Length: 148
Figure 1 (spheres, helix red, strand yellow):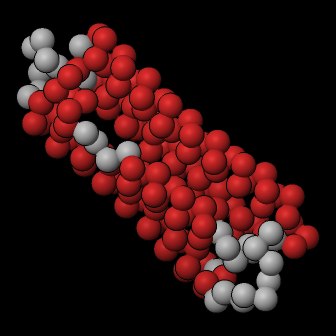
Figure 2 (cartoon, helix red, strand yellow):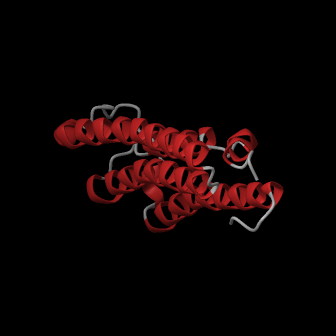
Figure 3 (cartoon, one colour):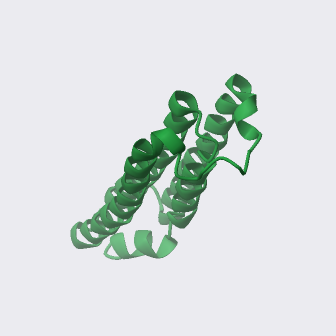
């Protein structure tokens, strides 16, 4: 990555970001193809999960925690990239941040498959939003490479 121009590095980051964002739709497709009935929402069922409410609460706390961690790690990696003048830390921050957001969607997938929880899509929405918010910033790469 160090031999690439900033523009090439930025295109690489955008490609990585897009692939990680696209994987969210693939998870939803897997759920739809294997359990299509779960997409028929019955509003009479409680959002809390009924008998599985403890799992739903734990998964919700994990989701919020992972979202928070994703931004903390990305910020730390960007700071390190600027300090060490190494754009690879920007890439690492993007991948770590998006991976933690993807784990939120995986929690939703577990809720869908293991507990047939019909509001699993809320975890997907949060994971998708998190990845969208991690869109690569050109300014971070410029700051990490300004001495080069």
